[in-house]
Length: 239
Image (cartoon, rainbow, N blue to C red; front, top):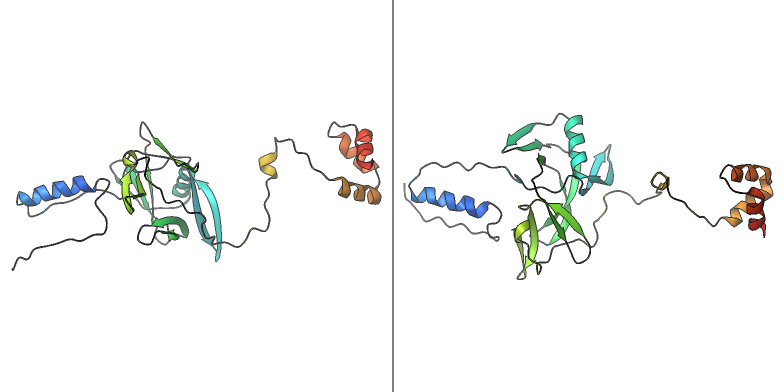
């Protein structure tokens, strides 16, 4: 068989664990090894914090629902509720999401844009002894492992680096807005989040309208249950 020189061209420089893997593979080639096997799993050891928020979209019965979830509880719930095929490599659990109905926004380094992509797999591993908190000047922050990958703008080019290699001068791509997949918001119920909060509402006009129709007896009874003096409150509204 005729041997020809092999040349590999790529737009991006090796990053993460790739330089070390390439070095070992080249050593094996120089030693004349005919067969080599590279073991590993995409994203092994690289993770965000358990309680970090994730923006996801789910297609249910033809309708798309967009929501923010916590990474750890969300994955744990999917693992429990669904029969997902699991493979374990170096203490990393990888769950295949074939035919997944979930989408998540991600950065595309080829065009510099953020778009929605299907979730192909879920990875879960033990938390390391220490985590890193990356904070931007605009006030955004995220907790990640030291070898988590980040796309940064360095020397005018998108560059893939580990958390521990991020510089203060690096620029992180942050979308100003993410195109919504669901329909516009029609209503927002926040009462459950305000149960322990004291609220003051300016409602003199609707109360006066209610009093003109229903009278003051029901209003006085309702105010009394709140620990207020109904007659004084009624006088203040009518004044």
